[in-house]
Amino acid sequence: MGKEDIAYFVGVLHTDGCIFTYSFGNKTRHRYILDVGKKSIPMLKKTRDIFYERFGRTLKIRKKLHKNENPTFLIEVDVANLRDVFARLKIDKKKLAPWIKNNRRFFCAYLAGVIDGDGDISIKRPQYPQCQVRITAGEELPVLMRLICQYLRCSCGLQTALVSTHSLPRAKAKFGVAYRHCFYLSKKNMKIMKKFVLPHIQIRHKKQKLLDFYKIREKCSIH
Image (tube, rainbow, N blue to C red; front, side):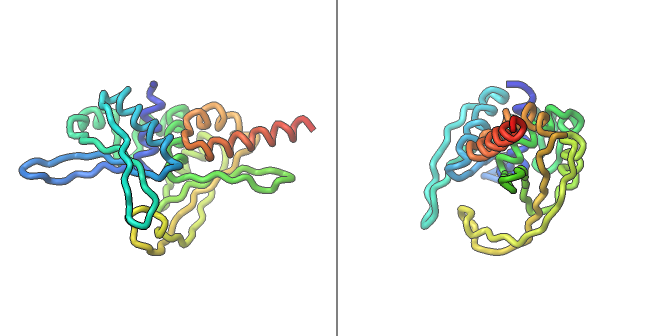
């Protein structure tokens, strides 16, 4: 595993992962948790493997049952002893480390983690196919948008939508505004996406959607 895996790890942290601090007795503890649905298990396994390979921590995936909801799967670990390592790598829940921002290869691996966490991929216009990638967040992500434009050589649009949290485990049903950051694959960025982003995407249906688009484009170019 190389530094791209750390970048992917940060992408997952910025979407579905969580590092929180709490007091237990006289001690302050720092804990990482990643709790996902069944379709996201490949992302969960990848994160577990990164903890082992890069941070020397062996984690088990646990199944968690919820009343009247589908089960979720999670990894959970105390990261107090990893604070120095995280600080050296500038791993932070909110901020993006300069070594990721300033390197296309690392940013693309980070983007794969973000897509696995909060992204969706759709193919539009069957006759003249377009592939749209959307990343949905609870706030605008201007740094992400700027880096997508810079490294994927395309524009990145922003849409707002009213979404419900009723399908999320443990969440009380409510509506709120979400921000969808959208970009399209084109001749300018297809090779970049295929070489630097696609290999790091773990969730099968998202990866397959991209592979399907590449196959469609190949058939179109032949005809």
